[in-house]
Length: 280
Ligand code: SAH
Image (cartoon, rainbow, N blue to C red; front, side, top):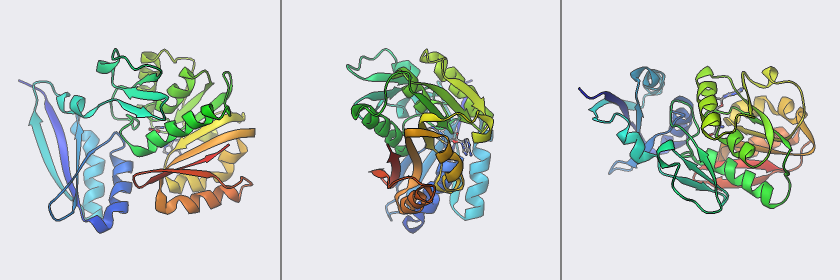
């Protein structure tokens, strides 16, 4: 008998889009498929191999009064739905994120970052990840980074950002408070032969208090604001900072929290309803 693939079909009114996307980002960090109902309501479908992964999402939807319906599919290949969904994502004309089954596909002049789509966020199918890699590519193009420079990937999820930086010649550390993310990042760093990246479970307090040439943090507006002082302290003088996971409507608030710690005005880049802030 084929294995089952578990799914949740969610529905939200368009006027609650920000709240709904925020909830999905938090509880379905590994990605979702988005569609639209004929009346304009948003449809999101989330799949998992293990139904336990969907429980926190179902609970959060119930609390927020978003409709959530369970789906179960018998799939000959339980990951076939995922596989269709995970297409290559090109970021900043420098990087391409690929699942392992497309690793051999040729991509001229692009650095391939191979990511095993598991429970951790960071398959490249979320605008906030793409924005970070676009920002990283931009810093390279502007010669603001050079081989051997150090980085911190704060909230590394799948490890995608740290791996891209390592493959571009930087050396650094990736950390995440979620042990599943660290497992996934370890698997991915080995798939990409980027094992020189140090992996640490925890947040800023768990990494040593060294200063870095580059800090990348794709988290969410609220924790980014709370950590403003601590993050700024760990940037080397003249270093760069990329913050992402910010809804455009929240970008000004995040920027001002960091400007209060002494940073200049950031450069903002946008994709869909998301913004990333870049200091260099
Ligand atoms: N860097 C990846 C993943 C971003 S998702 C990408 O760009 O795609 C955000 C990650 O941050 C999650 O894995 C979450 O567990 C982690 N996280 C959330 N708050 C954190 C904190 N305070 N310190 C470290 N990691 C955190």
